[in-house]
Length: 109
Image (cartoon, rainbow, N blue to C red; front, side, top):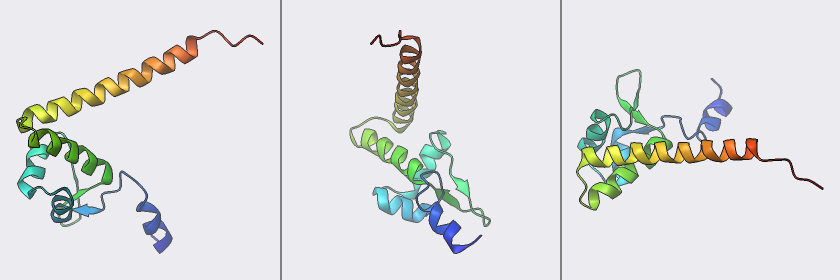
């Protein structure tokens, strides 16, 4: 892998660039919190060759949403379920919009 390849990955939301310690620090949570949302299967961090958890920016955004819900008093398991349901709703709405556009009559000029 060249240096250019490595730098290109920094823009990839799915590239696991953050260690557990750095991710926890960025989010203002404990490493235990990250483990808990992993155990709840909200996110599944990739593992380095040494077996350490690595998180992507996309996963950090999900973890931040979980923290937001937990900070509001939602139990962590419920927060994880809420996030999964929100994601499913967003996907269903996106698909509905695609179907609407595909089935709409062509514009008449």
